Length: 134
Image 1 (cartoon, rainbow, N blue to C red):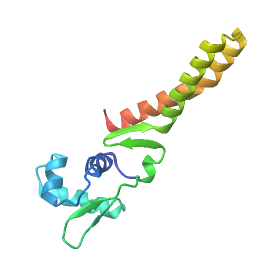
Image 2 (image 1 turned 90 degrees about the vertical axis):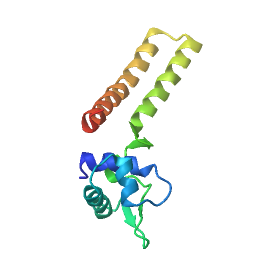
Image 3 (image 1 turned 60 degrees about the vertical axis):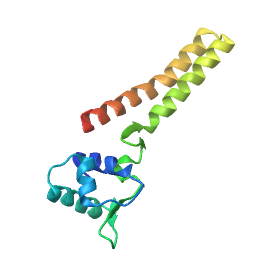
């Protein structure tokens, strides 16, 4: 498994659209040592998250690593996919309940169907927060 710190660096460098050198990566990552930056870039290459060009510059692949396959990544924001489905289902159920004014048993059924989605979404969000320390 790719370690937490490396994933954070990968997400920061992933936003770059052009090849970059060690010094530019050092500046973006906020590191003091070009040696440490070089080691991070070498680890990214080892995990097949980046590659080195013939010019000596680096390019980070946009494809997500396996650890982030069930997450939506936008810039440095990581969001579980299930959260999107949960919000969509909740909004859909609320609109339906407001427009049709169904009996209480249908309302309870909707709550029972959506509750596990919310539980899993909250669990995944807390897991991300604990993993990245945000």
